[in-house]
Amino acid sequence: IRREIGWSLASAAIYGIPAGIVAFGWDRFGWTRIYSDWDAFPLWYLPLSVLIYLFAHDTWFYWTHRWMHRPRLFRVAHAVHHASRPPTAWAAMSFHPIEALTGAVVVPLLVFLVPIHIAMLGVVLTVMTVMGVTNHMGTLNGGHYTAFARNAGDNQWYSFNDERVNRISGREVAGPEAYVLYYERMDQDGQPY
Image 1 (spheres, rainbow, N blue to C red):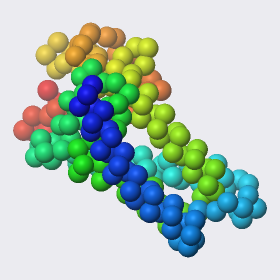
Image 2 (image 1 turned 90 degrees about the vertical axis):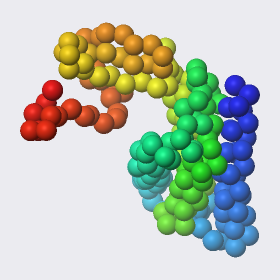
Image 3 (image 1 turned 90 degrees about the horizontal axis):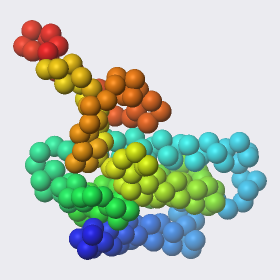
Image 4 (image 1 turned 135 degrees about the vertical axis):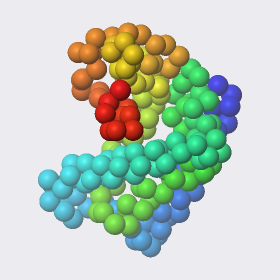
């Protein structure tokens, strides 16, 4: 856990520097599209702006996270994050500086493009933080690194949860938490096996 805390504190500094510059620029010079007057946009725009930010951030995270799993980049940077075993709340921000930089730019860039009320920006940052911490702490049923896979050999479904593997029924695979990619292994002729 000491390593997780160290990487998390380094990541917090990397996230904090652009955020601090943007906050200073907004406060002193009005550089951003952040606003504080509740009447600047219609009230329906408040929740919409939160959804826009969360969607943009999640899309950016999804693609950069996939990129981080490329073999060379994984070894150089993302392996730091995966070294958290078992993951704790500190794993949510336990990043190599390269990975921290990829995450630290999203919201600071968005505030220059998409108008958002300062309170709604607080909602976005709170949701992102709570989701990151809870995803790395796990749920009552498991931990951080989870996946379902069907074994082509025995045609059975398995749940992979951190270091545990359990056989499960196919009905347990589909659910509200299903959020990843689906792959089917194919042979040279394009037939599943």
